[in-house]
Image 1 (cartoon, rainbow, N blue to C red):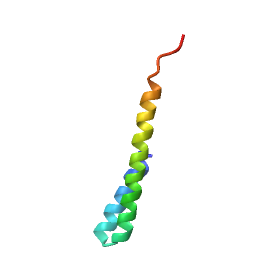
Image 2: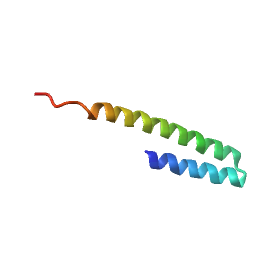
Image 3: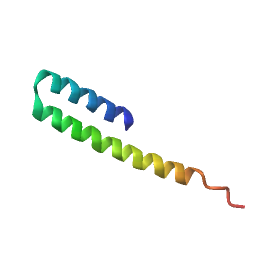
Image 4: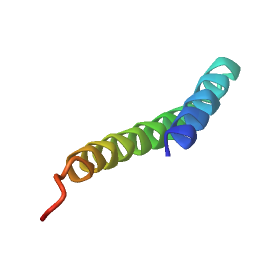
Amino acid sequence: MLRWAITFLIIALIAAALGFGGLAGTAAWIARVLFVVFLVLFVIGLVLGRRSPEV
């Protein structure tokens, strides 16, 4: 998920450098959404992964 966010960020930067404002904005928005989803899943994984074994 993080790899996809970075990929869309790079696409946004290249599109912005070439003057494609609409495409750059869309790619940056997708990158931001994917990064937030990654962070949420990462935190959930940390919380659920640190459970002590039940005896």
